[in-house]
Amino acid sequence: MAHTIGLSLDCHHPTRLAEFWKLALGYEDEPPPLPFKTRQEWAAQFDDPDDDQDDGAWLHDPAGVGPKMFLQQVKEPKTEKIRLHLDVRVSLEASKADRWPTIQGKVAQLVEAGGRVVGEHPEHHVVMADPEGNEFCVC
Image (cartoon, rainbow, N blue to C red; front, side, top):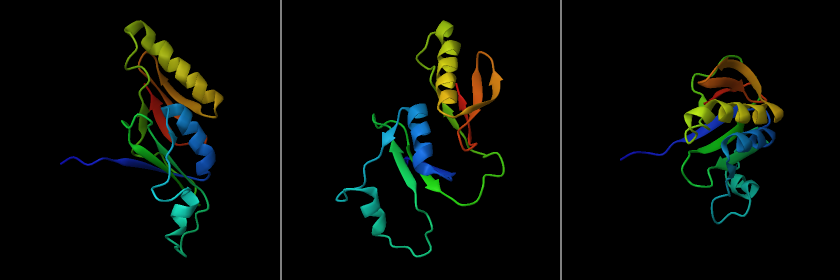
């Protein structure tokens, strides 16, 4: 039996960074599990005295196809390149002629939202970093 996966991203400001990732992936906020009405209500049930997080964001693909994503607050800074990264595949449906312009359009949108270009491989993909420096590719 196959299992589903969820993605967890360590960051300093989950709620703020979630806005960037919702734009990048077309995701939306994940509702809290039933019977809870808010995420705060859900989190309060755990009452972990060692938990120093005061922010978190839960995202999901509204079509139910992609993995869920949890943005987790951590205090320590990012120090190295992460070994696992996301590929934001925006050009799968595009014709060959539209592939690179589609990628460039998404890159421009994400730069406007606070991302930055790290490297470019013309006609194939663009390496980017989100506003907190987490690397990903747009392809």
